[in-house]
Length: 423
Image 1 (tube, rainbow, N blue to C red):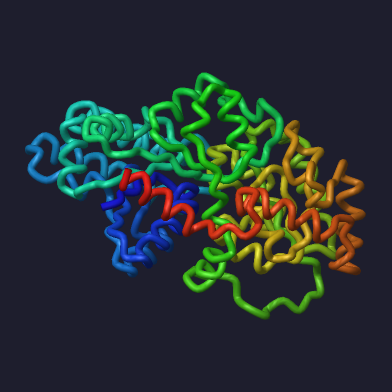
Image 2: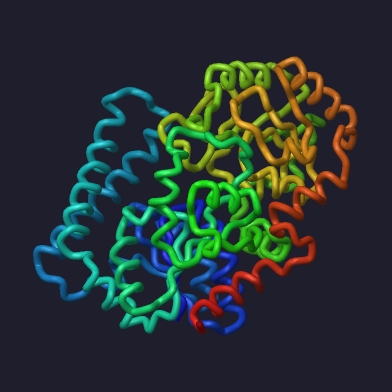
């Protein structure tokens, strides 16, 4: 069996297409969530895989039987803490007072405390080896995750002892072309993250070059494109997307704009972002919505009180709904360009440089005045953009298809994984 280990929204986004492809071709696959905090049952992609006959479960539910009374008690405490945190956090998400956040934080801290103790005592290499033996694992696949997270180290060590190949698959698309994109982007961290894996799959040449410069062995790295953004998966994803936007309800004539925020820690100017949101809120010709980054943490709600927060709407649906996308460093620009939507790159809101700017595949905006002028122009004519189809084609070729314009991305991922197991 080919095992895929997931942890949260982003890596599931990029791993699901690969699992789906392999299941279609009758390979035995299973998906196990390592994160006890994540809500597997409400994830539409995991539910879809389950409906296709894929084994999908929490890792600790599937392989925690007969571990003793103490373990059962601790496991129950973990579940109860995270369930309470989720139940209380939902109605209080917009409340910023310390007292309203305190029960949520305490529940999360207690759940994590019990989980770490349980992991130390019970989830060792012997436990991981029993999982590999029970499933008849032929290859194990993670995202680009630090091995010290969750139980990754234990599984990697058990796989190494059993000569089972360990692969690291993308959980995003690297589009930053500068070296230092955020505080944690260090060579030491990259070495620690990638060295334990036998094979590292990346979406584009840019990512490979960064890892090689860091010191990761080049022979381990293969460029296979983006499973998440390839045309085959975009078409399939349309059919399973849980939609919340009512179709054909807009008759205002306003330009529909979605501002896709990047993580503040990626050298984003938070104060200027807030001012930009003020500008967007004041444009009566524009209907602007805000989509915070899914991994932005507590700083994610910049400006949510000024324009509509659409955190509850999936990015794929927002790309379909919008007339125009505003981005800073988000890889969602890829899906927007593939759908033929105009993209405004708010260059002035961060200190990084991007691949889509280098390739001229976006409308570069240098300040607030340019943003206002561009949006008002698009309100009058939504096809009048200062970048060409050739630039978009080059960008998509590089980012989605790994430099090969006619690559069958999902088939290549499947061949690679199966080939690793066979060898």
